[in-house]
Image (cartoon, rainbow, N blue to C red; front, side, top):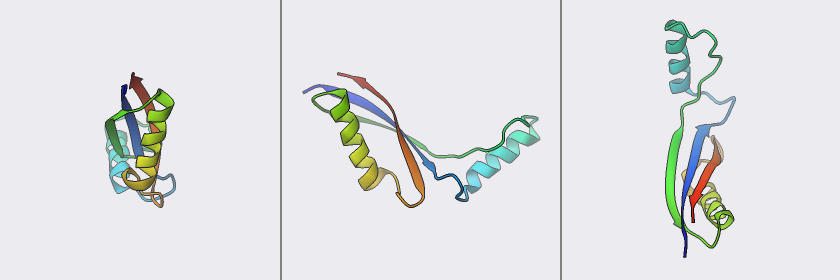
Length: 85
């Protein structure tokens, strides 16, 4: 069965307090990057998964995010890329 590398981004939901993101945004402003309006700090996860197709690998990754990798109350996730085959 083909193997796929799936890249997932997990970030705090917009509108929720993200102290780490606020600290980064404030530090960037202090360094002269005034154009930065917001920063959210999250996780980048790469999972190797077997699947019949890229769509199947994406579906497996989505199920993993919904069940474990992302907290549905406080976080959003994005399947950023599926590579391989």
